[in-house]
Length: 237
Image 1 (cartoon, rainbow, N blue to C red):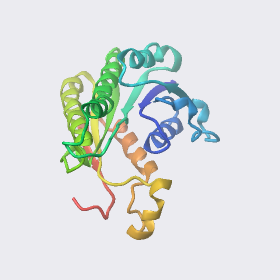
Image 2 (cartoon, rainbow, N blue to C red; image 1 turned 120 degrees about the vertical axis):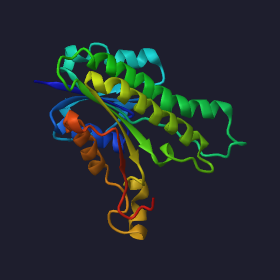
Image 3 (cartoon, one colour; image 1 turned 135 degrees about the vertical axis):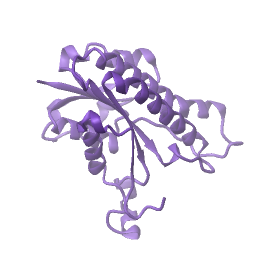
């Protein structure tokens, strides 16, 4: 049976790796981003035909609702939803403008609520014991705030609380909700030069992260993980 997945917050990094992984696992993947239709990272991929690029502002309730409306009629049962969006503007507390703080919260937390709610509403209609999986991308800032990171830690703390509340509410109803803490830098062309300084495997491989996300979806419901932290072997914690 054809199955559908949604990834909200798709760019050329981790989001793209998550989309490719799900497409390779035979899902039709709705890849959502503000400018998703302009992405070229999926061109030439073996399963690019399973990827549906969808432009959406995830902070707007009506736009997120539209993404999930009728998705199962088009692509099959929705079994996986991933929220991977975020925004960050570095600055001290006294420098931070109210509008910037609110924008980071809306992208990093409010959009997560809208995505999780929309996915749950669809999945709860399924008859299976495991109705679906909803995953949230967290960060080191989900656990502790640091100087200059008020715009990141605040929404990430809140997103973690959202995931915990959803897990406790939806788990008994057959939906697996998990929060993934990304505690380290993710390998990308931007950070490639750091590998020479830090050594092999010092940056997190996005494809390996995507494998871990999919493993969460595959878990038996007797051993569901609510929170998973991933970090390179050299990372101090």
